[in-house]
Image 1 (cartoon, rainbow, N blue to C red):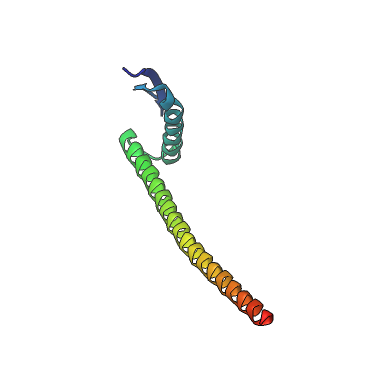
Image 2 (cartoon, rainbow, N blue to C red):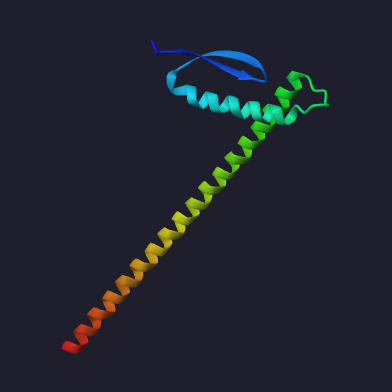
Length: 114
């Protein structure tokens, strides 16, 4: 059975205890800090938001940022694929030029030797 540690994360003054694999702890702490930061940005003094509303708005903001980043990654993947296709085309043209040059050089050698 996999080793599980108890991790306590505090978000907006509330403790959350999780059973996690040791290799998950650092990432979960970073996630908790991200959630805390977004919730603090939304929960401003003087504005009345229930803790549930703050949590939902923070989750929406985080999900939106994640979606935008995923779209950017997909766009970059498409650009890399296009560059690879272009590179293949350029490599083919270079090979064609090399072959043509080799043929012309051989023809010139044969003509000069005759």
